[in-house]
Image: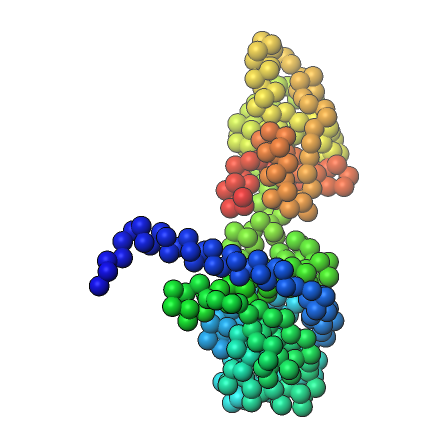
Length: 326
């Protein structure tokens, strides 16, 4: 037996990648007006997109179903064997069937076709064989066939599953545009994990509130501001008038300038050293957006104000980073 070494492995790896890239490029050249009509059918569907596949196509179907559902096109995966034993009852005339089959004659799927037609729902397919029953029974079918699998023995679904996955992602991307699906909409469907935090976390969820907000009145001295800044440990102080309206901001940077100018902390009134034109944020702002602004402006802390410019909170870079957004 010939020994398979590291050089052989790398050579094969590059060959597999090239084969799959070629398959994707062929897919790119083959797409036409049917793609738009295919997406239009999904877009106008009043029910759910029911995706069906067996084996490797089934794995791709599950992934695409999750992608569609998370991007505004409600979908669920249905295994053909389970469908034949009762699950087909979940399908209604409002639903749309999407069959994934490279051969176009998957034996587990063919018996379901008459039932779908009887129910009155349309059938779409991603099919690798135009001369097949599934292709013929489909209202619209997109060919995802490949000339050769990337597998060294040309048997294991490799290039074919890659092109199917890519085409599914293409359809999802088009539907996102058709539905005007926004990042806010996406966030509603992804409440968990880092992604969920990036899309859902707002300033009000993490800002310092109430007694934890560093505030001094405008008539106070610089020493009072330093005491408040040290006590609240946010690297800033918000200067307020009698109506709790923010009229100034004082930060660590302002403190360094005061020291360089040899100002008397006991005699200097805070209004004479505060920054009068400052950036603020709202409690309804998304934390990730504020983090980007602070990074861009090189700001370490911000006051949180309501629509009347009254102080409702304070936030700094450490709070944002510790929240888990990035």
